[in-house]
Amino acid sequence: MGQINNKIKICRAEHNLTQEELAQKTGVTRQTIIAVEKNKYVPSLELAFKIAGAFKKKIEEVFFYH
Image (cartoon, rainbow, N blue to C red):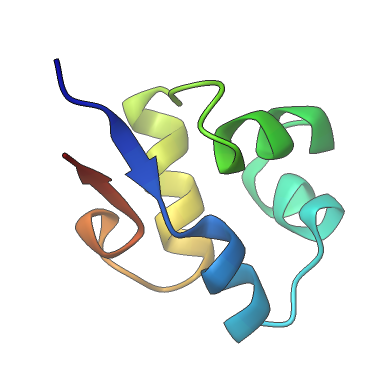
């Protein structure tokens, strides 16, 4: 079975954002961002779109299935 992975850490570095700042932009806790970033938690579709939107990227540029 496949897994959803992400490039959140890379995108945060490109935008000079901390986990806390991304959490504030997306309306979740820093702990949620940490869990998603480490692939320990698969975000809801709504949260995935919010995270991608915070980076001004398409969802498939941040999240990918393999």
